[in-house]
Length: 252
Image (cartoon, rainbow, N blue to C red; front, side):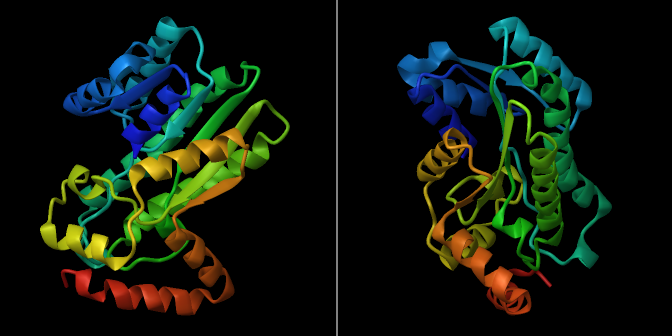
């Protein structure tokens, strides 16, 4: 989905900086940018490392002079196991990428964004950030932290030039399972077979449209929209329904 966000912004005439820890993935994005690649710059960045993120800001300003927005899209899931069976190493990795990576990006870029005539912060949470998913409890916790962090930022920056939006994707056809080091056919097929999958291209279009309209939040996909309503009306029943659907995915 991150790649589609980059390509969609380029199609609108934006100058875009793409970051990733994977150099090959960045080069593929450059290739796909085609004639728009002159407006795209790339940096290899480990967002879980504060020094790396601070160096990114310096490099971005050296390259472009200013930055008018950031989209925090990086995220990984956990193995489909219960919390009792997760190592602290896995738990910390998920929290570091999903929450602390987002935090470091925001803390680093916010002082500069506040100097711009108008700026945007878009943080990608997840449907799993407001709805408990057994087997993804730590992932959901990290995305719930992103949710409340972003909503708090919105309130703190209400009367500034920085617009803040949180995004809740449902099932999107991305490489998150593989990129999380969980290239399991059983897990991937179960994810894709659970609900209708939205294309990352469509998801990116919805996110950028939400940014352009200064929306408070964007629910991406009918599954996210339906479960948002269901969970608000009857959280216990919604949680029970999801637990039933996820039962076959848990390793234990």
